[in-house]
Amino acid sequence: MGLTAGFHSRRRRLLMDKMGPGAAALVPAASERIRSNDVEYRFRQNSDFDYLTGFPEPEALCLLLPGHPDHEYVLFVRPRDQERETWTGRRAGTEGAVQIYGADAAHPLAALDETVSALLADREILYYAMEGRGDYNRRVLAWVETMQAQRQRSGQGPTAVHDLRPLLHEMRLFKSEDEIEAMRRAAVVSCEGHRRAMSRARAGQYEYEVEAEIEYAFRARGASAPAYPSIVAAGANATVLHYTENCCRLEEADLLLIDAGAEVEMYCGDVTRTFPVGRRFDGRQRALYDVVLAAQEAAIFEIRPGVTVEDVHEAALRILVRGLIDLGILQGTVDENIADEHYRAFYMHRTSHWLGKDVHDVGVYRLQGASRKLEPGMIITVEPGLYLAEHSGAPPQWQGIGIRIEDDVLVRESGFEVLTEAAPKEIDEIEALRRDA
Ligand code: GLY
Ligand code: MN
Ligand code: MN
Image (cartoon, rainbow, N blue to C red; front, side, top):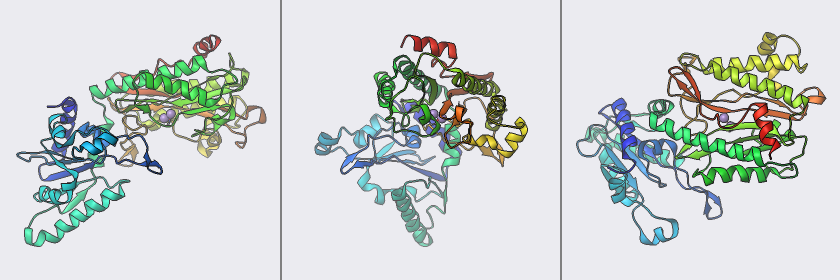
């Protein structure tokens, strides 16, 4: 049994039990992607593949054959190759796939087309996710087509291809203890980055310098990478939801919105903080910040088993709308504004998403047509914001302010646990850090 085989083998066992003995599952690893000419992006493993195997190399394929007497778990991998390894790095090869990663059998990728049909021959159902992998989709369909064409004579081979995602992603939605521990580490490192940024950003710097500070903290604590492109948005840039240019100068009067999270052990943090570039929030910034913080805290306090993501959103939304009305930015009543969606000029996204190996993690949000209930082990973000862009129709004195506050929250039997508490969000705490910056 290999280093990582414990967690992964439990997950494979559970998945195979759900699939049943007549089934097979194919799960491809990620492939390398070109960034420019012949140079690749840094490799990041596919989350489903990593969840089931822990095998860190590109191009591999996992085949699960529940109930097989000799090899329930087969890996196809790049073979050892001294020449290639000298250029592009070490490979586990077929031996490592067995000895280190716990595969029952491993084959070189070159043998895939000929071997896979034989291995699938006695399986009725093939589980496979037809997603974003055009190359593999075509190959898998070709295998199935060949086997189905031969079925009249052979009398065997899969007669159905089922989507693997409903089974696998439902598992991924519920984090086990080992995953929660990894999420805690991702959260802690993410918060450390935010504290560093909050205590170092100064007027006259550029957004990219703050990006460098936060990502320094991530990497220095062992994060593999930012979990997504860091958003470091000063002033009106914060009203652009996915602003990632990070190229502007910080002005004393700006707020700085930073949405950045660390990826640690293949789990994501996703944290947003907004703070003044100067030492203190000014009157309008403070007024809006208070509204967003109140909305965020109310939404977090909603979280417990049995409530829905919709309920959490609703809790945040009501407070955001109430605040916008009280500040004279919206007119009418809370209910009217929610019904006619006038608030969408200033709050145009949802409050939560699942969080895990993918920053927008897998798992369905609705079951049987209704928003699903939260259950222990789920992890969601809570990230209300207000964005008063120049074109938003906000009164001119409010324009150019964008605020979001985002935490990562574990649903527990007893309610909730905020994993990202170490990043300050109360005005007093933030201003105390800013005084010393
Ligand atoms: N950083 C991406 C998000 O907050 O959803
Ligand atoms: Mn998020
Ligand atoms: Mn975020």
